[in-house]
Image (tube, rainbow, N blue to C red):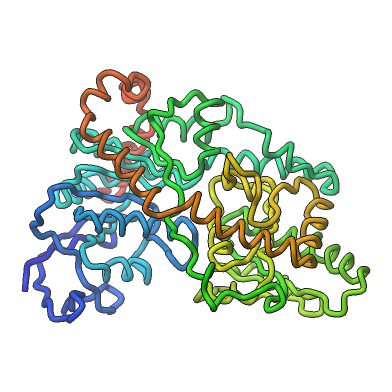
Length: 489
């Protein structure tokens, strides 16, 4: 038995802390606790025990990592596992309410789990006092806006790292450009124009996210293309940025008897978290515009059996109305396992806007399923020395996508070559050992030289921390004061 500490957020946002005894009787090392969540479900409380290593990592996020729902959740979960494997003390604080994803995280041995709220400075300071982080990783820039000033004031020696997930301002700007084109004439949609369009200096989300980069000591960027954009177009020194893509190994299906051939697969599939606007938009475009045209073109080729489009994804209630088996569209909802990818011939991902890396493409390559996507979908997912790809990813118009789909779906030689290239790119671009080694080396180097780096190379960051530039901090403090005064009235 050992003493553990429970940190939770009560109904009014104040922090409560209590000690509890946890019996370590599980043969696999998972704790069995007599304590329960307010929902009444059993939960292993996080352990604050002494360990040999002094390094402590605190993740601060708006959400719990959802490994089964989103690529961002998979990536965050893999980061947590990488730090645990190096014997860090790992802690995760989220602004979301406790749910099945927080419970899954609690069950992971060695991870401390905390609920926190924005605009509750003293509560967050208590979490910092308990976790004593040497590094704080902010999951997305708005988590940095809400909590980094507290870390800087209360734990000034802690390294502050921003994990962008994707460049949000790039994605939202492209969404605006597509909406503008839709307002004119959707038939003339040119995704080449969308991908070339860069947010101007007057675009507020751009300024907020760039400021977040400069306030931090290091920023994790998942795509080499986004590093290039931040460096070349927005003048962010590459010394501030480190590539942190997906963390995969070679596909187990490449040389496995479980892999399926062109003839053993049929139909196309789409998958994605439909809370993510690019995914919701792409499935609407696919079902209303692209798929009827694709089916019509294939029917004109004299093919006996027309393909169907199978749609999977979390939070897809609003997309279920697209279910139309008569037109070859079947909506399945949440996919509990990705193994179903083995049965499909093509992953269809006609993204009109977005940024970062696309987890669905990495998953498809892993399962030997070639991909049809747009220039936006494949952005940052190509090899500089070899332009061959795991499918087709250069489409910029509706006709391009239709042509690419027919070529890949009906030509066995093209399909075999695309599958092989997908397996190759999976290992070359997202090899887990290489990617994590680069990331950890960058983190260690910056931390070991943190004081000198801040004093000699962080002038813009220090300007942003000056009193006149700290609007996000003072806005947060004002909200807290306002809400506190209301309670006292």
